[in-house]
Length: 127
Image (cartoon, rainbow, N blue to C red; front, side, top):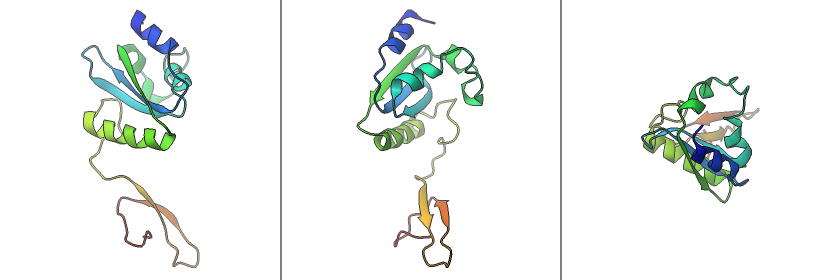
């Protein structure tokens, strides 16, 4: 692990935010969010963490880490989505499409209201 990367991992803030894992060219290869950056980012570099498919081989390719501290988890979520759509990192799969933000819709007119995800925003706020 590069010495600069070790120093970055030691000095991560325990605040909400977004992290960008970059390769040797400085290009983001993975973008994620966390309610506490320090434990989340460090977890990728701990031994025995190869249990998640998305991180296999990722830690070895990381040359630099950029963190952006946000005021809240919600702000981090929106920033993460926008950065993924802009940079299209190789290890991000779920949010790479060009679709709009997902909404949660509740059918209030049914006898038994349903909760569902939709990409369409409805005028009354229901599907």
